[in-house]
Length: 184
Ligand SMILES: C[S@@+](CC[C@H](N)C(=O)[O-])C[C@H]1O[C@@H](n2cnc3c(N)ncnc32)[C@H](O)[C@@H]1O
Image (cartoon, rainbow, N blue to C red):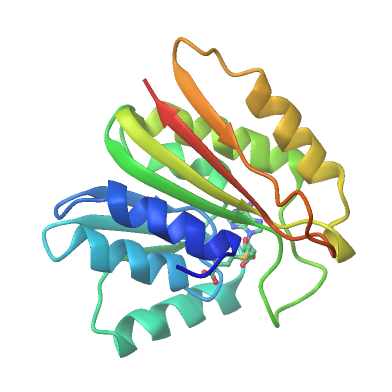
């Protein structure tokens, strides 16, 4: 395994997501996480994927077609994911907070909607379900979203959730942070 946040998140997801799983990619972007979830959940599984940018929705659909995979890809804010799944029904939810690589630098995730979406996603997770987050920050995004999310997850009830917040202690240049939340 490469020693970076994306590889670590993918490794944890690969151990968690079983064939037939119900998964959500809350920030579709270029579709790489959506494609991974489709491969892990297999043809019996269900994957929903959300992004507010039409370009991200297009790229995600193109990648799925290229790889002969299938997911329901919506141009929709992740804040509204509760309209698409029942509470306590989802095995895994992935977020990559930040901005679309190579896309419009003015469109990126923001603390207020990101925290609302985390809460919406936690309600949808089934007991034993996993939320895996790659938290990009710095540059256009700044640091407010990172700080607000890290503060928020520390307040989650430890009887309901286990939160593992990781840091690359000696890496420079704002490396993305891996963050994992298990329900129950
Ligand atoms: C870091 S990128 C995601 C990368 C993606 N996971 C991949 O594998 O390529 C973050 C994405 O979040 C999207 N985004 C920003 N705000 C959003 C919102 N409220 N709901 C859903 N997606 C949002 C952006 O448009 C961008 O494509």
